[in-house]
Length: 389
Image 1: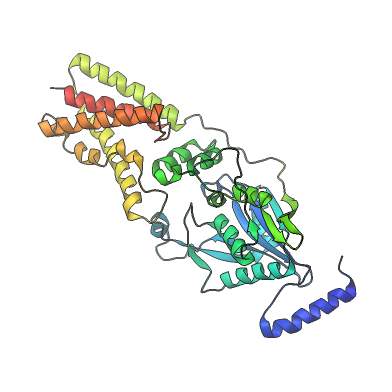
Image 2 (image 1 turned 180 degrees about the vertical axis):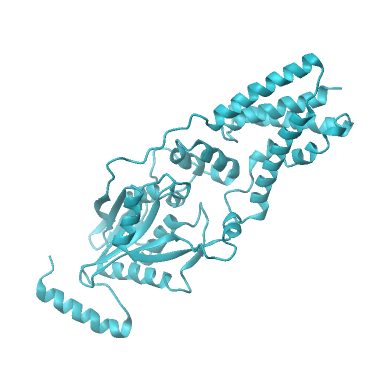
């Protein structure tokens, strides 16, 4: 509890010093990490992190949020798709920040950090400098530079090697993809789309620092981090607070029509048509044109993300093996299906996809599980086009 005389003395001192040097914190200030639970919308699927600065003397209570962007940015949607959208650090009163998450019924927790007065001022100063108009924008990267990794970086840099991060935060080493999947439970179409877009960088084993790209893991990192003090190594978190806990947690149940179910039904339907074609010596060219057009168009989208965007997580995408952009061209050449080069293309495509499917099933996981029936459809229709006279 702050005594009245102490409060008046500190407040007057800070006011006088602030006139010349800018606002600083009192010794009674607190620096904490805010972690917000995932929400139901895709943009909120993985949760959120921010930094809270509270000072009862200066009557400061605000949140520094690296997860905001400006919808009025010229060419907003194209920049977003191409990974060229700049995110920014925004500063808002704590009460307004909390209200927005309460409305979405997303739990909020706080980790109060064990910092000296000098360290608190260093973190505050670093945040204030970052919040200046010339510094507030940064190029967002889903894996390497986001609202969560920025929190660890700003605190680690301000404390100048005082932090001792844990050697590990889980019993087994995980990849980015393995860490992401639990958040997509019940979001089956989103999971399929994300796995379709992501490339091999997400299958890299993650270090402790890299794990900070997810807010929940950043929270675990701080729970296990130590800080160098005059008394030796101490836990950096001195207090855990639950700021808001909804009566009912956000839980999204799986849909009836998941990608797996839809695609397996589609496979059975196409297999039935293929058997009928073989028995009746028919060929529904429109079916093949549709199948290969969609597969090829998907491949073009994968290719676009890989080579025409700045997203680091979508390069080296193995999905291009089955969703080949060449199928897009082949769809328009099916009227020449008896040409040797067309037949050879479909033979090689079926063999390549079959090999990838075997590798995916027994060795290294390459694709989303929902892609399996799609691969089988392409194998069957490609093989049929090769063997049909």
